[in-house]
Each structure stands twice: as C-alpha cells, then as structure tokens.
Image (cartoon, rainbow, N blue to C red; front, side, top):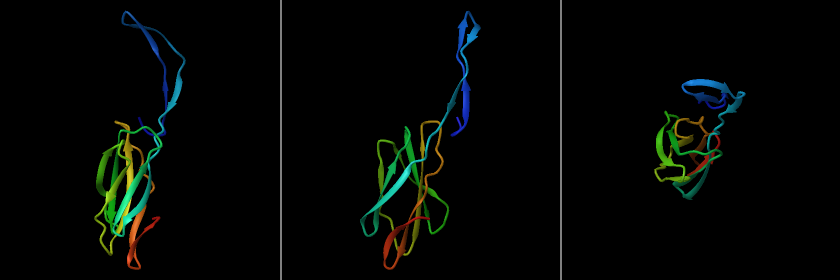
Length: 128
C-alpha cells in the first residue's frame, strides 16, 4: 500500500469455486504519519532523541547526517523503544537527524529533521 493512496475494496462470496456476489465497494486510505522528533541534552555533548508516534508502527529508524553529508542509519529500534542517545557529538560538527517508521510492509515519509550544531563554544539545537 502507498501512504495517502485511496483504495477500493469489496468482499465476494465464494460458493463451490464461483463468486456469487459482491458487497458494495468501500474506500480505504492508508495514512501513516511520520514520527516526530524531540531532543534534549543530557550533558554538553550528549543528546537524547525522543521519537513520537502518531500511528501504529513496529520499528523505527533514525538517520544522521554530519556536516551536510549523506544521511546514514544511526539506529533502528522496535516501536516499544521510544528514544535513543547520541554520545558521539564532537566540536565543531553539525548534526541533522530524521526518522522513518514501518508498520511491517509500509514505510512512512521522513520526519521533519532536527539539528544540533556547535556554536559559541557549546552545542545547541536548531531547526534546519
């Protein structure tokens, strides 16, 4: 299923290998909203990223970009785990984080990114 796509379904009765009738079609739209991300510092160089789910998911994947480079997988967790710690921050780098989640077969779009940058002698959050 594609996220946001409208699908039509109907149910048929099978009798001795032949469909004898169908119900009226009914519409179904698969909507799985991307997770939300929130961050807090647990020390000057360690952040906790909380993942907020708006739909039922099985797993989520957090990706990270360093200094504007390509995003790479940072961690993948079951939906029962709603946060992760990044203790690898080093000055003077800038980090971006984004997340997707899966229901098993379908993957959401990316979350809105959050950023952490080194500025004025310490790390701060920013909105990219």
